[in-house]
Image (cartoon, rainbow, N blue to C red):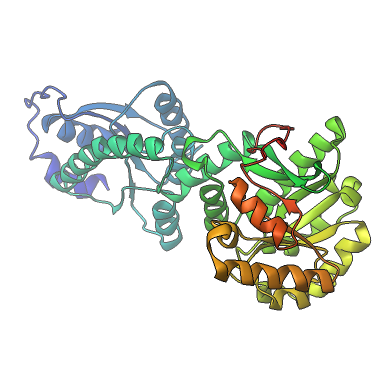
Length: 402
């Protein structure tokens, strides 16, 4: 490597002075001091302020204590590799461009580098001008990334690389909590149950769909499902609420052995829990879903089909799940009082459920007119903002609207 650089070193005069670091600050990491000195001097000559670290651990610590515009690191180093350094940096900085260099390119390392958000993966020897150009582009994009991050935080949505996504998802799990929305019986003017709805304090995953999307992308649906069920179990252990608790279940959760374990946190409260099978993924991905339902019922759980009238959760799902409860999607409930077509559909669903001895819940009721239309069609169990919004346990529903 040093031999390959000798011709390039001659291009840099010992008398060259470092220009003011108006292009930004670079942390250059390499355990070979002569090589680091050559590259650092070239970057200084091109307007960067450059600091040098001789190993990954020292570099990781400096990145935690100081702000840099670009990190350039060798891959093969003692104590901490460049890939490990990249992952460490992403735990606290989602945008810092990381340029990795290696004298022995490896396909797996390259894949990991890209997966965890490396800006570039370069093979040594790297021409000095090429490295300077790459670092210049990285510094410019870092400025754009910071702007983008501000926009994402405002919108509540983030794209990001895998390592950054892992950090945000981990933060979401650590700050996860459950809001609860009452499900009421209008005829009895009482609370029938509460639905547990996932919430968290990670700014880019506040919306449950964003959290679920991240879990799917990272292959961590089981982790999310376990965290939700453990949180609900903790609440039931402390608060002992009236009525049933509805807990959403992704179909992928049916492949998690923990769900069926008698030692799982929620298993102790199975007789008071209704598991809602959502329409996020098709049931045909699950091997023998009827056997899964049978095992859950043997533990004491009841089963509900969520979002009837949307997605896959049509009448065909009854044969696979045989639910005790169905929840009608809000798309059928919205403006129910104004749509004869919706009224005919809902009347048919109410009659079918009555014949099958299945309880029916109408979701998304927001107006008195929607509620009254549902009652006229034979419905009774209601959920929606008309009665209460989801809150920390447990909001009191309103029944006094005429």
